[in-house]
Length: 311
Ligand SMILES: *[C@@H]1O[C@H](CO)[C@@H](O)[C@H](O)[C@H]1NC(C)=O
Ligand SMILES: *[C@@H]1O[C@H](CO)[C@@H](O)[C@H](O)[C@H]1NC(C)=O
Image (cartoon, rainbow, N blue to C red):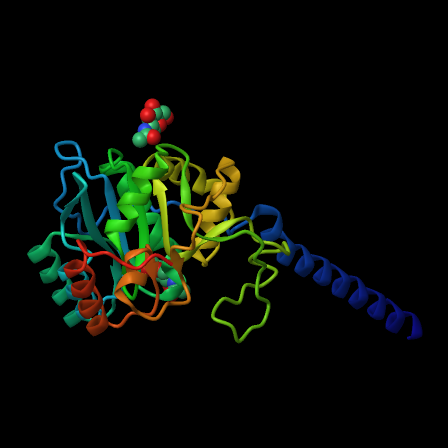
């Protein structure tokens, strides 16, 4: 009787052990195979903008991320810094990056907006914050496939003020044509491990303690050739929902180092209070509401010929 009990105990221990081993292997496998490597999405574009880069290559393409509902922000951008313009003889073109929504009414409105302005790039992924990397990579894919002739590309957001005049001037002065990447440099950032943070990244998603050098996602600029290189290398880079860090990981693999555009600070991811003379010497400022965008832009445009006191 005791022997049978003993045998049953042994048997159950063996079964338990095997179960534990199986479970631990099962949870370990994803680490080995790396399921978080970025997968380029092969499906077609839902909307393509009306731009013929072969016929009429732009000097600078501004790719603006916005959500489905931000119609007002897009309208204001189209009427301010996003107007199609020639600056110092260089063509500037602004396009919007969009995903999809589950709301039928919003989808219809966005499709209509796209037909009206022909300035939307759209693919089939859910338009949420955590899909921002997909959105950015869609923009980079579009440049690579449809507009490799663009000399420069900026990726920015819909609550940014962009001084396209000063940006063009500085890019021409810098006179760099390849492997150039600039913006608000973040050379020594590290992952935020507090769950409450918007930028929380778990050790599973990103096991290392430091991020590679990258530029704040609020606004960064790169030479056109970087689009193809980032697109091609992206499939071998671990996926990260923070799009600016993800692009930084791609750049690290390509050995492209983000550089300053100018000796003075010109990118302001934390925002900057407005004065005409101050905004004439910046490239990008964050947290600008649609109504202020109109005011700042008109002040900037009407002051272009005037002098500002030297600082
Ligand atoms: C991102 O988009 C894909 C494709 O539409 C969707 O399956 C996924 O749930 C989205 N991600 C999040 C975090 O919602
Ligand atoms: C820009 O650089 C090229 C060489 O890379 C040089 O030939 C040209 O003169 C430079 N232009 C300016 C305006 O500095």
